[in-house]
Image (cartoon, rainbow, N blue to C red; front, top):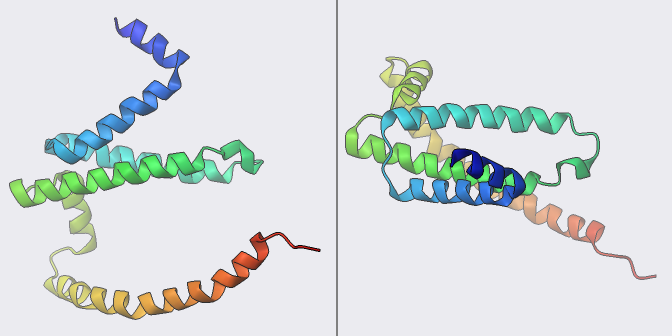
Length: 152
């Protein structure tokens, strides 16, 4: 039975993507145990490194034409993972070993770091957001001028 499923997945790879998408969407609804969330976070880190390193070794741009689809699927996976970890933190007050270790690494036992980051984070986002919007507003006409065909 398993061999027939693997053979059908080899013949029709779009079924594998469909199953992957169904699993990602089910992560939004079904609560996951902490050991599975830890494994998925580690898998997410490995996949991010593989996509990042793989993009450096592309000879032609058309060799990686599936990049938008890969980016969409990985973003959806990260969103589902974020929702699953938030659910674990809020309901069970246990985020798993990877998140706890990362929190200890970043913050340690210092309450001052927590307070400083909590106070500075809104200030950075409120001060940088208008600058980014202004820069994108300035570059938009230049980009449209480059993209539009020239009528001669």
